[in-house]
Length: 208
Image (cartoon, rainbow, N blue to C red):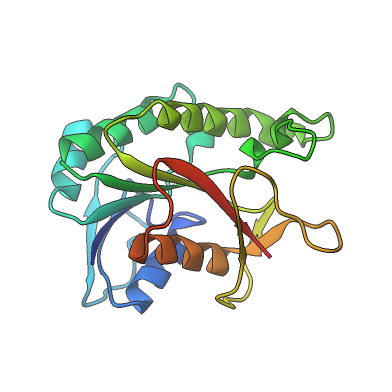
């Protein structure tokens, strides 16, 4: 499969890159940064593109089977980056679009969002609300077959086990009440969805 990965050198993106290459996919790594180019690999092409440049982005991703975005909407103050990515994917004629979401948009048993809770960390709230706005934009999208993959509340480097539970809109917790998943298993879940689509124009979540 030929995959374009936006934000390929970021916190989540570099794990998605490693997972995709380990599965033998042909990968185009798209990043704005010049000093963080991935290590050379036979199946990897590195392209420096600003994701907010719709014309350049659409040119870089045209001809791929799907696009995975690890662009962080939480850092996208005016929403221009996420809008440009959606427009670029559509302009390139790619129908399948997978994106890294956030846990703050997930629901609790009460039906309220995680981000709306009084104890939600203040330093994360603004970014989480921006990610929520991106999710709401995708929910109105009719042209793309999109998937918004929300991680567990804790997404940290760890072990790749290849095992995880799947949920839809509600935060998943374990027997101890914890919600967590490693970056490596989150990447595995994303590539599982890329290879065997089970979700269409919807969000799902993964956790242990």
